[in-house]
Image (tube, rainbow, N blue to C red; front, side, top):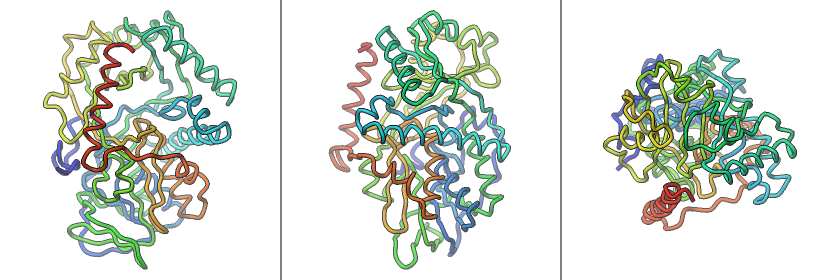
Length: 434
């Protein structure tokens, strides 16, 4: 089964609150016949569009091919959190990689936020960008751990925008009965991801990038000319960029061994008249310490946007709303009878160590994916770093490409069953509060 079409209609955006509150672009034509360009980018999400835009600004001709619509995948479906740092805590990165390497990664993570904010301002992208992400734990030990991370960032990197919250301070912001304090990051942001994706597409198009939708790549190879083939056409190029994340499929086996597609789900409730009292008393986003993270925020029209629950393989659950209602009610028991107006899923890419997978696939081929739920900033930064590498500056790209990367165990046939087994164990730990 092909993940590109397993759960959605070809050429149609998922029925999300994002799609319902977004002025989508007119469909781009599919690739027909042969084209030639400097760079061919496969995938019109954050990574692909950022790569294309930065390359076009540097004077390259660029073609982007997408099997579905612009921003159809995780880029247009995610929780919209532009967070600081990486998926792993910075202290863990320092212990794993040493002081100097960890500092480089922190600086690049800060650059990722700055890059997104700069692009939004430069191109006037209306994506409801707002500051503030809170992180909450479920008991005192988790609260202390979050406080220690905030202190570490302040002392080690001079990052003073991550403010500890006691249990009482946390409840003044988020009145959930299950949280036990944490911290709020005033230097992080949340936004409307589909509007951001389409804004990047408009900017890329204005810079001369050609975007073809409904143009699934079936093969590519390197040679005197790199050839990228769809069922109806072929692109000859000097460089190719695989920007497919969880939708990589069979385009590269080496990357596929290291990047696993998983599905995550979000709901939007009916508008809540007293949302500021019932869910969040500040216009911020929240993520908690569950292994399968709960994340949420208020929408512009007063709904609760709540993400929770994952599955592995191809098919989404039959009733996404019921799947996500369960963790929502654990966080907000008083919302047990609230109506759910939208429920959708998306496929993202994770890695074994929850660090992105940057790979030079040959002299003229690049790949970046596996953002592990931290992709709003990191994917857009990846496009910038790929563009710099194609232009001869490999420093940023190589910082990620040189990270220790291990494949998922079990090979092509067994990696999904082994992942399900591991995730089931972590899910049990979440339920038991361990």
